[in-house]
Image (cartoon, rainbow, N blue to C red):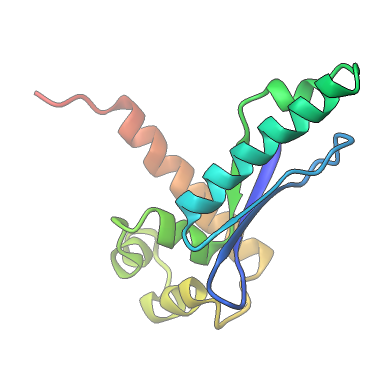
Length: 132
C-alpha cells in the first residue's frame, strides 16, 4: 500500500493511502509521527469494519505501507539531514533546495527524480556500511 504524507497549509500533516484498494485510510497530526500513528489507527479501524461486516479485508490492509513524502515532509521527518549539506552533496544549489524544503518553489519531475536517486544511493551506501 502506498501512503502519501504531506504538509498541509495549516502546518499539520496528513497521511493517506493512494492506491485505491477499495478503502481509504487517513491519519492527521501536528507532526509526521502523529499523522503516521493516526494512519495506522485508521487502518485498524478499517480492518475492524470489514470484520464486523463479515467481509474479507483487502490484502493491501495486511501489507506494510510504503510511505511517500513530499520534500518538505521528508526533511521534517528526517530532520537530522541538513538540506544545505544534502544539496551540496548531490550538486543542487543549496538555496534552491531550501526553497524546495519550505515548499516555496515548484520542483520539476526531473529534479525530484534526481533527489530521489540521490536518496536511494545514500541509502544503499548506508546499507553496505559496516562500522569497526
